[in-house]
Length: 452
Image (cartoon, rainbow, N blue to C red; front, side):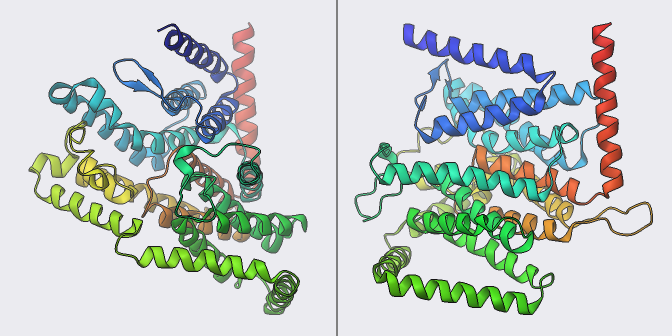
């Protein structure tokens, strides 16, 4: 009891401290809360949560803090709701409606515990989108942020493989020769860092050190053996390559390809065991994916069962989803169809046609935002084409990743950052400077008024 009270007190103290800073430094609050929550999840700290009638986890607290911070910033700077946030708001309304409908028949605990998955995904993205006027973020800066996040997560993976850090029990798979030291969500961020590093070195022509970073990110992504991450990152890389062909000279691509082939050939000749180990990893995962007892077959069976249950439901449940908590008694016997490993299928099963439509509308508006330039004062499109290539590749990887996984705080935050970078990418330099000057003037006026 004392430990529970102490944990609750620590969470409340941290939350109050962050909220007190939210009024003056909203950006810092968000970019402290989300990484801290991801760090605690990575090391399984506070994984049991606090029982307050409904379990309260670290991710819940972080999402509440960032969401409140976003709305406070909206009130302080007197800005309008961005049109692209409407689908996110609709999803939050559906979550609240689902919980409200489930309180009576299933109780607070069952209703609350079954609704947080989508909340963890939507809240970080919405909060970051609401805070867009408070910070600048172009494609290059987003790529560097992903690169540094990839370095941190890769370091954790390497330390776990080396025995310096313990591997969580949930990540140990006795059937595999190479242990998955990171879960899929963290491995996916390393994969996005791989795409970002290649873009920084090849398209943006940044420091050559990013080639070394790309090599490390690629090796770690392969060694983590998350097949769904491989497919999602491969989709992003193919898109990055095809779109970059429109920007780079063919001779440059030929030189780069020749250099890569020569480098890989030298590695294979010097260390043939590397090629043998890589082939074994790929072969083992392909065989498991094709197996009738593999995880993919298990997921597909869960998708089919969840879809059949959805079609057999009532008209209200098909329209806005069943009341939250309905799956509490079925989770042990029908785990694959109640804990659904797909953002698309899960949203349809739990939030009906309206929820699925809102999710797809959100993704569609984000895709349009990435490729929709505004006009400069002289009437010409104002868009950084190199930045657009990166944002498209990252967004495509996210879309593919959501087929076998639901994503969480990290994936929602990346979508929010992609939207902010797209807004910055699609405005002219002059318009960007004017917007920044207006924000700084408004902020200084507010501070002066408070001081007087």
